[in-house]
Length: 222
Image (cartoon, rainbow, N blue to C red):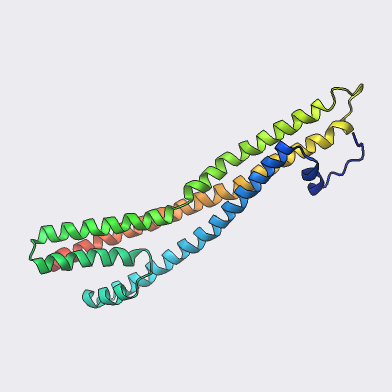
């Protein structure tokens, strides 16, 4: 063994065994994917909050609901409360034209809003389970690479008459890089998952509150 081994990060990665290098490559891919999803989800949730604020400002001004429906329906593309409002009011107006009873009309509007609500929540929760998986699995993947690397380091000492720390240290250091990369991939994913799950829950509560309030308005109109 080279007593004066290069212990820089790149050198340790280059000198690691094939299995450890494969583990590091997998962890690097998981880390890049999780960071990509972290930024995408951040922009998505910010847009959902902004759209909800804007729509609630327009809705609670007390204007004509038909006019608001026409304006919102023509500007499709927004997420959050607008699709829920459009789905509910469209179903309400259709049943009113058909002469349905007030209870049947309100029930149909509520079902339409709940369906739109579920679609919006599903879109916001997309890939959150992936972040949770990266956060829970990455440390174990890194640990596997570390165990494999340390095993190889000690196997390399089998034919050495007198083993010293200087001889075994480079191999152990290379193996521990896998654990470090596992933690580097896991920690941001766990933090982002917890944060975004909280944000989605707050938006879900906000949407459910709007459904109840809008249902009361439709009931009074009916």
